[in-house]
Length: 120
Length: 372
Image (cartoon, rainbow over all chains, first blue to last red):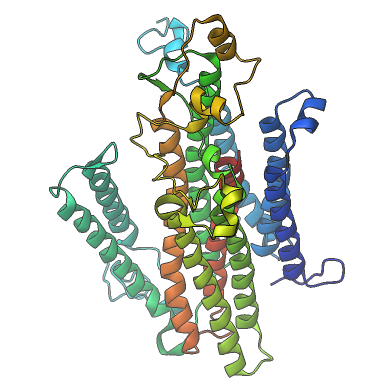
């Protein structure tokens, strides 16, 4: 259990309040007309919404992992955080090399990296 | 080697925890085999969302039975943990986890594998989302003719985030999971309190675990409403829903994994003209219709890829919630019988780690699948 306080208050309650506020902000970001703001930034409304949602999701993710899952403030927090981050390398590979490639990449690859054409 | 040797107990259990944690067990192998049989036969029972007959159904239950058998062995081994009221929480001896509870480390390793599962689902979604033109883009490009389906990506958010009413089930679920993450932490807090009356502790833990259970049930109920049922609106709200009296489910809207003739009113030039929205004047379709080279009409789309990525990802998450409900049912009953003390409160902590992980995944699923 947590042996610290956030702004002098119970960390779980503070975390809970913070998460509720961030979630409310997410829903408002989707419900609000961001068209004019997106135009002034030279982008589409959906892209701006995605950025806002991503920016809000990051602190939410950290707040749940750090405080509710005790990856902050406990004796074993350090090594367990490292454990939790261990798959990060594989996650990066999946997101960058699978998630962001084109579905037709396999057929669009140059000859030398297709099966049977390894230049041997 | 004899199974009577307490240092090398039976892999079928139960174990003698006084001699350390068990590290020989058939349970993981049997469980894996059961899950494999279950998933292969379940997948084989459906083709493009259509039920393929009862032929493979018995095998599905065989898979479930093997899973149950594996769980039983695991249970039998783990139940010896608390025999005669004794509590043993073995610590890891080797680097880098020295002196950390073995079960806690195991839970984190399990969560790591879960991260990989959801990452594969997310990367699949990203690949198709960015790699296939959205239906809106295809519609405005004019590269379609009425009556022939075009392959395009239709995000579920187009339906879900179209109004406050449509987004309500997902939004309620988001709050439900965050509140449930908090209630399980509170259950753990009271379970670990030593300077508290036993009966007060029992009631507090039961109340908080029960609330978590209720919120998990609410989550799946909302999901069912969103996917299959929809919901009616009171009359005074009809005007805020284009005069419609109901909020349709995704099923009713035709957002299905086998949807190869999907139609949406926003991809209908006649609807857009008659409802005053009109076509985007900067679009190619508008220019083509003005020039008389495109007759307009109602675009038909094949959205199987987009619907599949949505249902598989949110369904996998929902399955995790269901698994949590099973665990919570047992734990709530145990708490009601006064089964938790500060000495065995770690069980709540380890389940809590799983439950927070389910919440973490939803933190990403909700914005990227429901709102964007």
